[in-house]
Each structure stands twice: as structure tokens, then as C-alpha cells.
Amino acid sequence: MGISRRTVLTGAAAATAASSLSIRAARAQAAPVKIGFMGELTGPAAPVGLPNRLGAEAARNYINRNGGIAGKQLELVILDNASNPNQAVSALREFASRGVNLIVGPSITGTALAVQPLLTELKLIACYMGTPEIRFTHELFTRNAFQTAQSNWTRQHQIGQFLSQRFPAIREFTGAIPDVAAGHGGWAGFSQGVKNMYPKNAKHDVTMLNPTLSKFGATDFKQQLAELMSSPAKGFWTMLFGSDGITFYQQAQQFGLSKKFDAMVDYGIDIDLPKTLKRNVPGAVWSSSYWYYGATAETPMTKEVIRLFTENGDPYPHGFALSGHAPVMAYAAAIAATGSTETDKVIAGMEGREFETLTGKVYYRKEDHQFVGRTYLVNWEPTQADPGWRAREWVAIEDKDVINAPRPGQKWEG
Image (cartoon, rainbow, N blue to C red; front, side, top):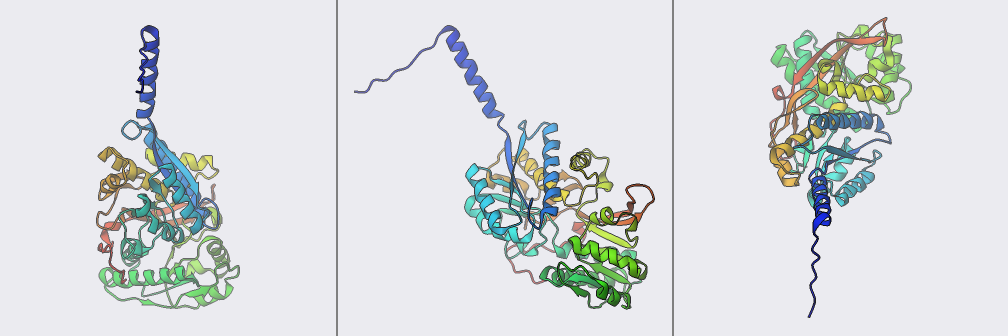
């Protein structure tokens, strides 16, 4: 027969034990809410990863300074996927092993495609930050993924809407793209956007002339620039990104490219264009961006982003900061509303729920989890005063005005 023992504490010992229990209980109750951040912090996509991370950290700071989530502080658990699909899968599994089920990221299409099949199996949620791949809201749709970046289709129709309203006299467009799938896909989307929007707003059709092609990583664009200068088109669009885009614009100055076209849209460089070219920034260019910090500079959320960017040596935040900021704010809103961090409850709490982020009120569409907010076009001009450039004008274009109808589970037909 076993013997059961129970120790009975009295007096000071009992009081000490009770106090210890209450402290442990309080600590358990105040345990932070953990959200995972999985970004491209190293590797070829690292220029995307840093602003993504700073945006997420700014959202965390804003939430914690305003009472946390239902009284609990928010903690970011940060892992690097090194811009590599295999590393992204490893990072996802590590989050699962740590019990972190709410993930911000990854950003680029390749890493997002790699983790997508595992989300349901591991009972995780991922808010992709930057991929514009429209298949995620169509044939690849899963309830465990949310897409923060607008699809190429939506953004190109927003650009088409802007151009057809601001520059209705343009009847021919050309462009400059890298000779890779992303470049050709972007041009196809842009072509569709302007072809759909010009008859609607400018009351005439447009002709799309073949864009110039260049190898990714090119250092000499003189041949492409000569072709562009001889084109009859008055509208121009480019998706040259990274160092390719900067080199292209630097060499374009010698040709006077910005004086040839009535409107130029840059889809690849964002605010890095004026920050790099400074007083040589071409005044005809409109940069497409997820968010322009100057549009919301006086809000507490934006001030926190600016503070973090400044601490990292750059006081002019990149539009990619929005892609890290919005998912954190969405998770916080869903957890506060449902009182739970359980995967299924958070999914239900995020679907269609409005929340505040850097651009104002936004939401993930319930049917297909597509982000619905707004995108920006910013026109730069050189200045004599530092930093050598400024925004001459910016416009915010609402997603809801042009976004495609939801078709989760159905193949995207364009």
C-alpha cells in the first residue's frame, strides 16, 4: 500500500509560498504574445528584408507603448531565411517547434511558394510581405496564408488609372525590362492595365510598343537607351530593379530620356531612386510604392518608423516598411478581438477586419485574404538643399477601385 504525504505550511512559510505562487501566476498571465518574423535579411533580397524588419519592429513598439495586446506585451521572434527557399522551410519548422504560430513573412515569391504547402500541416499562419503573385489568392489559396502586397494585376491597373486620368493624351507606351520572367510578367500586367483604363477614362485605345530588353545584372544600357530615344511613344514604364535600375537612370541622363517622355513610371526602385541619384533624379519619373512616408509623416506610427530608420542610418523610410508593419497590426487586432492566439481563431479574426497601419485603415479581404488598402505614386524633383531631392507630388490610389473579383481556388486567367 502506498503512502501519500502532504506537507502543511503555517505562518510565515505559508505566506512566503502564497506570495511566490501569486508572482508566478502574474508572470504567466503577463507572458508576451509572440509573433514570428521571417524575412530575407541576408542574400540577394536583403534590400527588401531590412525595411520589412524595421516596419515590423515599429509596429511592435507602437503596440507595446499603447498598452500591448489585451494588456500583454508583443514580442517579435526574428529568423532569417537568407533569401533561400530551403532556408525558409527550415525557419518555418523552427517557428513551429518553438510554438510560434503567427508568422510575418516571407516576402519574395520563391520563399513564399516554398513555405505555402506546410502552413496547414504545421497549423501556422503566414502573412506574406512583398510577393505580388496573384496565384496565392487563386489556385494556390489556403486559409492559412494572407497576402499583404497588392497583386501585379491590381497595382498595374492602379497605375493605368492614374496615367489615363493625368496624361490622357498619351496614345503609345514603351518600356525597359529585364529579360526574365518577372520582367515580362510585369510588362504584360502593365499593358493590360493601361489598355483597360485608357478607353474608360481617356476615351481612346493605346498602343503598346515592344519594350527594350536587357540581361539581369547588366552594366551598359546605351543600346537600349538609343532604341528608346527613337521610339514614337510618349509614355514609359520600367521594371528594372536594384543596381540595374540605378545604372539605367544614371546613363539615361546623357541621353536626355526624361525630357523625351511625357510620363515615366518606375516600378522597381521606389525611394531608392532619389536617394541614390539625389540632384540628378529625373523629374518626369513617378515611383510606384506600397507606402510613401511623407504622406503620413505626422502620425505616431510613421514617426516610429522614421525613428527606427534614422537609428539605422537612413531617415527616409522605404515603402517596404509597410509590408512588415501591416501584418503585425493585423495580428494584434485579431488577437484583441478574439481573445486568442489559436490559429483558427486568429484566421477568423483577421478575415475582413479593418485595422490601422501606416497608410490608414486597411483589411484582408475575407474571401481570398488579399490585402485591400492603397498604393502610392510619387513624383520626385531635384533640389539644391540637402538631401538634394524631394517629393514634388504624391497620390494615393485605393485598391478597392480596381481590385480583381475574388476567386479563391480557381485558376487565374488574367
